[in-house]
Length: 292
Image (cartoon, rainbow, N blue to C red; front, side, top):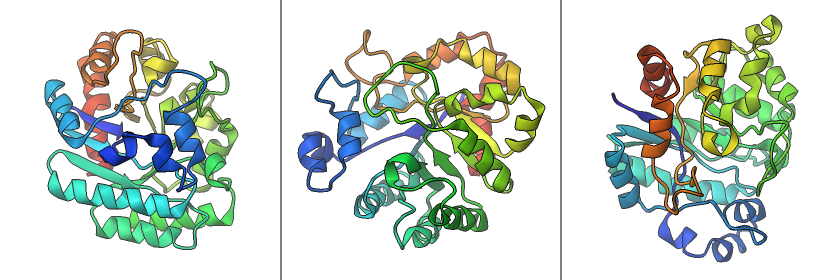
């Protein structure tokens, strides 16, 4: 069965050889706190492009979608976008990408146009709470309108309202995402990390109607939830709006492995008791429909 991973991050080796040294002059404090915390061992793995492709082949992954980070500074967004522009041109059969964007920058809407012109599949991963604005601010509304005009999906980071503490955890009120989906019903929204369990609230008919344009990805799932979350969410909303995402190269099973991989999580998904049709929706069919 083909697999499309809709949530992967990747950096050049000069970035991850010394993350804090790289991030300090760029004033990307949140990123360095997430990937290189000083108070605990990091679960962030690292991979270069060759390792990524090798791990994809090992797990029989057809294609990955590289997501941008929610950088605090627009210059870092543009730097990452250049890495991704190069990689999607070099490996068009294996890699697609979303463009990084900070809505507070004057050029934010221009980046949406640039992303389309350069073959990007969407915008994100974005996290307004870190990037200096809210989902209701005019700067974010401008980005939403630009993405709607270009028919470009948007990936937003979401955390569960109740859960364990971890490096970089930021509260993301779920009501804001329900409001956004309702305000822009024509937008293509992807809420990362199971949308902070928002799909369970879709058992409320009013919420379900408002979230009709929203997809949820499964990124970092083994670090957050028991694998029964797959069956639970499919029972709640069906399988047609779920996207497999790993958050590679995050180490999803840190007590078992010191290096990232795709295979272990995929094996867990295939052992959840979902039907073959439901698994195909999640692992590749929904991504093909959404990204084209």
